[in-house]
Length: 391
Ligand code: UDP
Image (cartoon, rainbow, N blue to C red):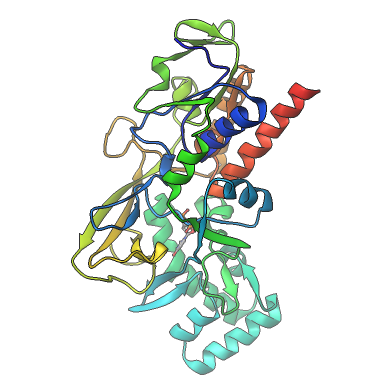
């Protein structure tokens, strides 16, 4: 087996950043092991038979206010500006999501909408965001009524489908991702930079991994190359003690053979359909909080304005992750509850006893990262490693 300085397990954003940094900034040789037949993790996209760039693991819309992330990624891609808009099907109408003053105007009679709007602005200020669980604490009866309405019509059933529980039973940071917005800004995100890699995420990550020091192997189970030695706390690579760093972006419970039990994840089933019509819906994504077993439908051609006589949509059906069931064994979301964080802490302590293993990313950190968070954390982790080496 060829010699490598660093091994990276997983070729999603986190793994790609770490591999690229080790290769380009420290001149390390890097082996990237990816279990899927393709790179780019859950951002994997490709142009389908209808000529539409589709996101194989559900919609990924890049947005960031982190200058260093934007500058870093811009080395590897051109961008196509794109501001994500989502509509929600509520009471037979399509309203802007996050719920905002425009949504209020669609669903309430004019006079009542104006009254509530004035109250929202005087209470929270114009152009502010209030998480639904905060709004529900309002002592003002009219705001309480609004909060109850939005909670019931937008959050309760969607969250039940997505997480299998009520909004109170999951970390408040989850529903706070989609706050009530006290403005007429219909955009889903409010970050400084909102754009899609012009040739797609797979192309972007291919570019990141194209450094001469990086070797990528796909369709490879990391465990067929790597073994952990619990006694000596060392890592064996192809049967020999490996001295270099090992970046691990998978699930820690799996890495440690579930010694401290299984961590819960939510999975998804995707139903892709290509339809012989030029457009299916008026926005990229329409959420269905209260109807259907799926949470949302995304129509991909809106994202890059792909020209095609047909259109491709995907419906998302959330489900529990089950590692034994091939239709449920892709972990998409860590289930963000206090009890699960405690379970995760045991694995975090365990991995810390292997000093050369660097956990990184949504799965290994058991965090609900957006793409830019994953990139930012990998960049920060790399910087601290580089600093330690230089000291
Ligand atoms: N959410 C909801 N109704 C919506 C949109 C979001 O209840 O119409 C809640 C739900 O709990 C969801 C969370 O807000 O899981 C975060 O939504 P986001 O769109 O950020 O989820 P993602 O795109 O990451 O799946």
